[in-house]
Image (cartoon, rainbow, N blue to C red; front, side):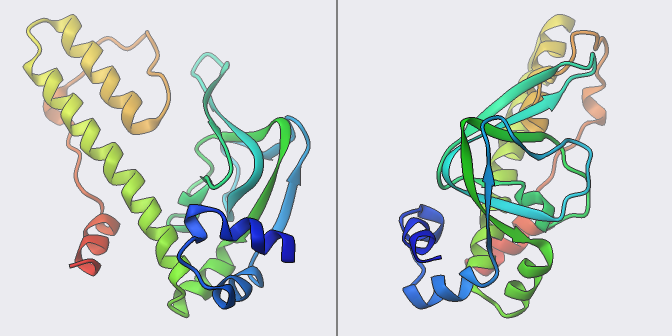
Length: 202
């Protein structure tokens, strides 16, 4: 695991950790290797771990209503993958596969994360902050796009802006078949985790 410790220390997510903290953390992680285009997890399956990309790339796909898959992102070294699994019990919201050259990842099981969190390990809080910041950014941008939709002058403009808001929030393309959107029924608020994170940093 010594080479992995060196690789971990070079990633922004681990940069603030000491060598002793990295060694302690490594006991809760395991190496996962993906061949080119090999599956990491599939949309809809149970989520019980998150991953940090050490090397290579991970492709993220979303299943569209017509059955096709759309590639949403290509994640490189340092990226967190599947981290929402650590804060909720929902199924995977997307499919992830190794990139063209495969990928090498660190796997953190939810049970191991719970142990780190109860021990108040700094890495557990860094992951939570990453989750909160990601969600908060999406929510802020979604609110801005919904405001644009409410100010739109025509129905077509309102639908287009509402679709953009949905794409920002959910991370995938809204189908063209959508016709009507009740903007007054849509409300986006800060999550409990976001408020708790802000309170911790005051």
